[in-house]
Image (cartoon, rainbow, N blue to C red; front, side, top):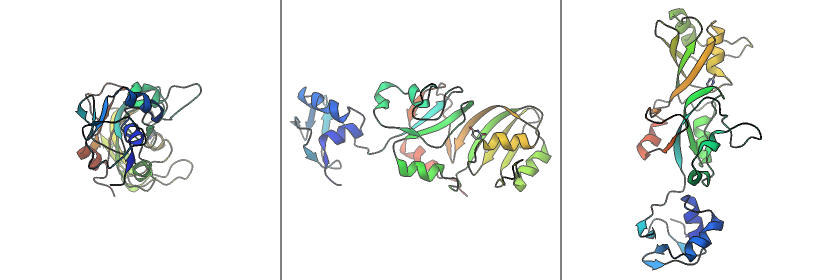
Length: 238
Ligand code: URA
């Protein structure tokens, strides 16, 4: 692996910003291969060096991937002058990582949101033609039925002429339904259901590819994705 400066290594891990690293090293809490490390510019090979903080070994990862259970009422943005963003919900130690949301959920949509600092991954997941399937639970006015499901399968044409790719609508016999789309047009699920005369009252994203929302996460909470979970994002793409 290419050599890295120690301050970059520690800031990539979200342990300290590059400015804070000096202080951390001065306190003598970091060792590299058993020797106290004092210089931020010290070079090391992340795959080989044994770096310890307070005697505990660190495992180097360049990028970070988190799942958030996005609550309603916050916007999917990194900053905003007047409204709360999903980044405002992060605990302080994660704010240092430079995370940003992968794709977008509306302010009033809840559910699975991936946060990362990996621009390439984000692009591959959120690109309109990624073909990654996203599943939503919608509560609507009215009762979606098989004729709606057939129209979804055909590929709906929205009021403004926008043509949607075939999508799945699973009816429950009541006012809730599951919708799975393979693209990410603006307000797509709401506009599709509205086009069938079933305006959305509430919307929650349940999965992205094979990655499912962890139902034990409280609204607003985040947790790191495991490596296996990360791979499931690309499962089942069209
Ligand atoms: N479709 C919508 O209409 N809104 C979302 O937030 C996501 C998908």
